[in-house]
Length: 139
Image (cartoon, rainbow, N blue to C red; front, side, top):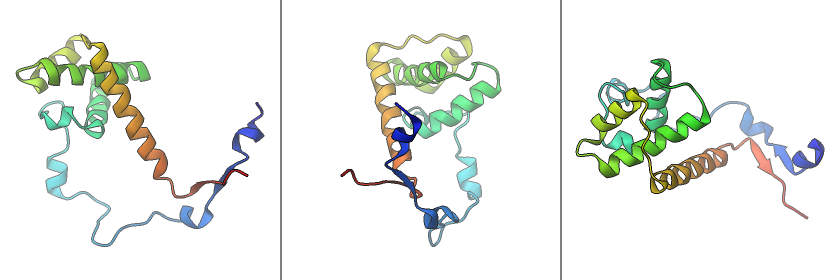
């Protein structure tokens, strides 16, 4: 399949691409309260292990600390291990931190299913949030 065929039904909405929209009442910088509640490997909560966006931040921190190498496979293991810890642990954040530091990824197929589903939903939502990329109707 040629590259031209792959992109022949995709267009760009140049008006939407000019500048980002900022909704009324919102600010570009997070408030001090939002910054204080950002996920951290040093102070994880149960809610952090349930949120894909929080887990992405935690994964970036683990990579920065060299607990993991940055790869799609390691990100998937990271997500699956979070699901495992939520299901099995009395203190899921502490168990998760221990497992990530030790490189132990004991997730089951059910945990991997959660990770796959969460990734698909998040990436699908992100793809829909590109108002500058349009799909022409098929004829």
